[in-house]
Each structure stands twice: as structure tokens, then as C-alpha cells.
Image 1 (spheres, rainbow, N blue to C red):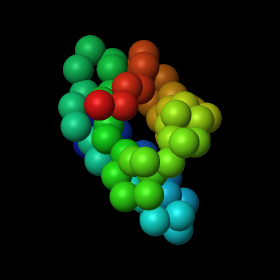
Image 2 (cartoon, one colour):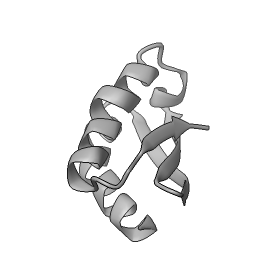
Image 3 (tube, one colour):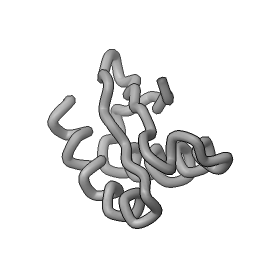
Image 4 (cartoon, rainbow, N blue to C red):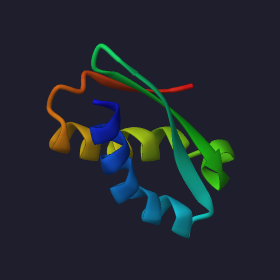
Length: 72
């Protein structure tokens, strides 16, 4: 599943990179994806919104077995 998640993250990365940020896959375990927002996204006050309304939404659409996305 890790490869699938990385493939989906590669689809959302251009939008994050355009704003000076990025997302790093930390772990995938039992349907829970752990990521770290880096660059401008790591300190942005809107990072939680970006994470859930952007990254998590796309992950769940593409990989239905994803249960949750957690920032670490």
C-alpha cells in the first residue's frame, strides 16, 4: 500500500510545491497514513485544512481502504 500512497502523494505535491511546501510519507500502517508537511506547509496556519481537505480527500478517493491521515 505504501507505493500506492506515494503515487497519490505525487499527484498533490505540485500544488504544495507551488506554495513552497511539500509532504513526506512517514508510515502506512493498518490503513492509517502518517505524513509530515514540510517547507512553508509545515508552519502554515492553514496546514491542517490543507492536510484534510486536500491531501486526505485525494488519498481516500484513490485508495478507499485508507482509514485516516495523520500529521506527525
